[in-house]
Length: 292
View 1 (cartoon, rainbow, N blue to C red):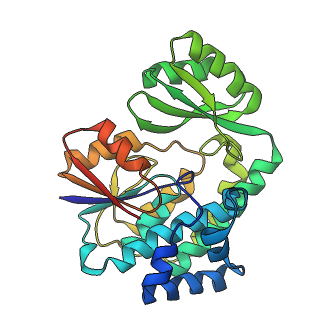
View 2: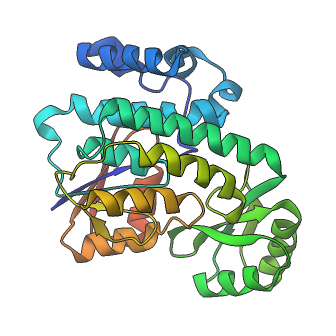
């Protein structure tokens, strides 16, 4: 069985999607439609902007979403998923590709999410850090001991967790994690503490936007970040999208569940190869490939 997976923030690069725009009429039309919906020419930043411009959350998230979704649409008959999943932001790409959200609604939600997250980041200094070579349980235990907000945000693959929270709490946790034997506990260059309680203001804002958006039954199960389980019920999908902003991305668990349910081939659609690498570390017995 074939699973299509969609990357999240951090996979962007200048020039992303330009080949699609130049060589495919359908892709060009969708990119131009996106420029209209967003009210600025995101294609100019994607194709010829600077890293700094592309790194702004309000640009990054729609850019990655557009690259992934338009790629899926241009595959035509090749895009026949038995199941889909996306990492954080990539969940929105997965839902559009699987027909649960329309292109326009998906883009509007991603844009609203990005702006709400940007605002939440500006309210209070917060950050994230990557932790390598410690068991999940040990990282959870140390986060629970540290005063302030610090939680596990991304379960990326065995031995690779991202923690998220207030700057001082992250600094304190990193010291403890290194003392406990972590190979690395390295702060990331991100705008704020995604997938943590620090995103609560953004969650409330996004909830309203999602409430007023039509979600249909997808063509195949969508394994959602919040519980790593397959979903096809529109009400459940909506609730999980809202919860996702302050809850961890359970990527390791999602991939394991997809494999347990029959996935033997994972195809990453969108910029970069991050998810292919993570899937290979979770289970070397499945095949991985990508299109960008």
